[in-house]
Structures are given as structure tokens and as C-alpha cells.
Image (cartoon, rainbow, N blue to C red; front, side):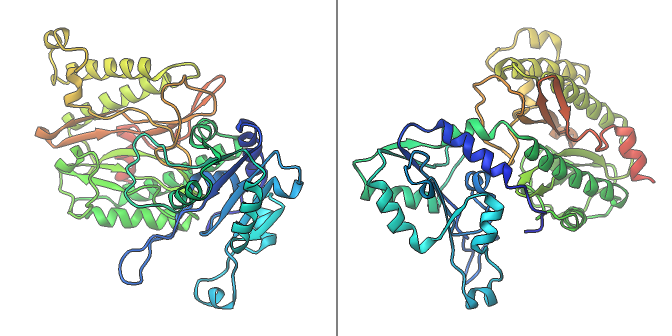
Length: 429
């Protein structure tokens, strides 16, 4: 791992919070992700299961967490199972956690090898009444590849059909959506690395530079600041592609007079940041581009003020829709007379702003949480309104990360240049 050590008290406290949510005499299991194959003997970079990481801080494959808080044997209340290393693995793959290192990272005292899991699990299943299994229940998840966790759940239900099964996902969605101080600091650091990349980038952009050269500048700055790299696939979309929401080709030259939509951000210690800015290829916005940019900026600032404890997403989304509509009328993209006659279920602004304004942020870019519940202190949300005008080849989205507190909110990206004039000044410095 490139990041510095995270205090184990974060994971100790997280497990305590999770254990309090369990029903009596229950056992819970969490599995690491697999290392996924590409082709031939290739494999993708390992990405840890977010729930397992949140509970343990262990960033390694073939890891299992077993929790049985009501066990009468203290050594069985928390057990971490690790992949046992050997000389061959050390030579070919490098260092793996020792038991002592895993104990120090996680705060779990009982560390065993994965080869011991079956026997341990079988013994405890004879004592417990129910088992909590971890499944991916993110509302937008589309999972076509069977995960290590899914294989375990299938195996467990086949071999222990008489047990009562419970879902860990609702608990994890509830707990993970409220960030602790340590987590907030990690997200802040990811935002700081993102700022470093953006500031490095601005004077580099000029007509003729390619989208992939911009991507290279960013990844250089991110990695040199201890990030693994992008928190998600970078969107570097110039010209008409600034209106393509998930443009990821990043393969063409940027032309004078166009804008570039940059939806790019760094991760740090598995925690994500999520930023979007729009910059002019020539170093100066046209009058129309600046009008659209400032319209979106006004909406972003107005929307950010509404991300407060107790607000609800239906109210928030409706209010943002009203802000967008006002700006679209000013830009002469909508007529007030047409707005007055619009179908409330299909508002006219959706032609120019077709995505959501905010999502949870944390270990995942689209982090887990309940949009049906009121906003809480400790939630971190993106705020990312946009206006997209394909006919004019102008797509503008502006996005910062907002922490909700008991006394209001804090913009975690408040130091990242956002005013059109500041962006122009830095591009021409």
C-alpha cells in the first residue's frame, strides 16, 4: 500500500458499531474480493471489498473476517483469517501480512490462516442460531461476475440450510454512510491530492494537447502523492463530448475554442474524492461558455447550502430542479411560458440536466447509504449540477464534496479553484 498507516482504533470502533446492530447469538462473515483475471495469465489490480476494509483495514486478497460477539469464548468473538505466505509467494508476489502486522493494522487479536477457516467455522455454526452474510445491495449495482462473497453465500446456504440467514448490507449502509473523524481526514486528503493534480494541470492545457496527455499529468501528480491513482475512470471530455456523461475514451486532441469537462479525482487509502471542473482549451472562456459556467456555479452553490442535517432528498432534488430551471430560462434555453405548462412528472429542465445532483461518497465513489432517510451529520455528499447543450458543444458540470455537520456543512474542496476567472488566471500564469 502507498498510503500511510491508518490508526487501528478506526476499525476497532467500526466493529463495535456493527456488533451492536446484530441480533442475539449471531455470527457474521465478510470475505475479501478476488483478484480478477484479464486474459492469458494476466490479472487486474486488487481492490479490496469495502465492507471488509471498513471493518478491518486489511488490504489483501484471500482474507476473511468472522465475528461472533455472543461467543462465550473470547478468542472466538473476532477472528481474522489470512492467506499464509511462504518463500515462493514472497519471491513472486512480495510481502504479505504477518499475523503480527494484521493484528497491529486491524486491532483483532485472534489471527489464523485461511486454511483453518473451515474447521473453525464448522465448530461455531454448531453453536450460533443465525448467520449474517454480506451481499452487494447497492441500488445501482449490476454484478455479472460471481464474487468470492457470493460463492461463499451459495456454499454456506447449501451446507447449513437450517440456520437463519440475515443481511449485513442494510447495517453496513447505515453505518458506513456516517463518517468518523479519521475517515473524514482520509477523504480530505484525497481531496487535497485532487487539488494538487488540478493545479498542476491548468497551465499545461493549450490547443492541441490530447485528452490522454491530460490524464497522464493527473495520474503523475496523484501517484507521487501516495494515491493509487484515479478514484474512478477519468472523464476528460473536450468539445461536444463534454455533453456525454460517461465519456471515457480520452483519446482526441483538444481544439481551440472548445471547453474540456474534467470529471477526475484521486483516491487515498481506498477513500474516494470526486471532482468535476470545466476549463477552456484556449485559456479563456467565450462569453457564452462563461454564461453557462456561471449558471451552473450558481446552482452548485445554491444546492450545496441545502445539503444540511434533516433535509430530505425529495425536497432537495425538487429545489435543485427549480434552481436549474431559473438558470435555463436566463440562458434562453427554456421559456417561462412553457415551464408553467410543463408536466411536473417530466420537467423540461431534464433535457439539459438529466442526472442526479448528489450521491454518497466514501470508500466507494457512489458509496452506500439510504436516500430515503433524512440527511445526517457525518454524511459526505457530492454536489454536481450540470447543463449540457449538445447543439453548442458546451457541457458544464461543477462538482465538490460536501460534509454535513451538526452546525451546517463544510466544502471539502473549498480550496480547489472554481471561479471562471481564477481558472483562466491559473491557465495563463
